[in-house]
Image (cartoon, rainbow, N blue to C red; front, side, top):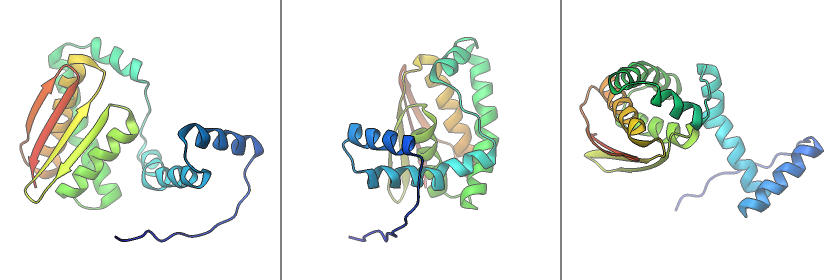
Amino acid sequence: MKTKKTSTITFRIDEKYEKGLRKEAEEKRISLNTLANQIFGDHVEYDQFMKKFGMVEMSKGSFKDLLNSLDEKNIINFAKSIGSTEPKDFILFKWKKLTPDSVSEFIKMYFEHCGYGMCDMQTNDSTSEVSIHHDFGKKGSIFLKAFLEAIVQSSLERDSDVTITDNSVTLQFSN
């Protein structure tokens, strides 16, 4: 098993931030060091790229309201539009190449940080499979299906097999 290299650093933070961090670490039942590592990791791996790329955050309620205001055809067109350009550009921006691994890493990162749902990913030599559980209802599944299909098609030029329910989407594509 490979152990991660660590470094020791010392710095000062506002007292109110320290209190908030200690409270959060206690609530999560993790050490302050673990919480700090998670926060720094999120910044280095995600936040700085999202800010540089110009991403906008939206509440789950607002996103659900947006989807509910659209008919199925417009949801699909909207999802295909954003799924076929922005993810590909972001993948190239962060990982510098379009591969099944970089596409899978993008999908995992996107769902872990953007709040669209819980993501489970399994990859082997021949296929990648992504399952998303969300609480946006049927229109959310329609959006996520078209969005994920567009990512895979535009980035890897591959079709995918997608199964949806009212609150889940499972996508499979070849590596």
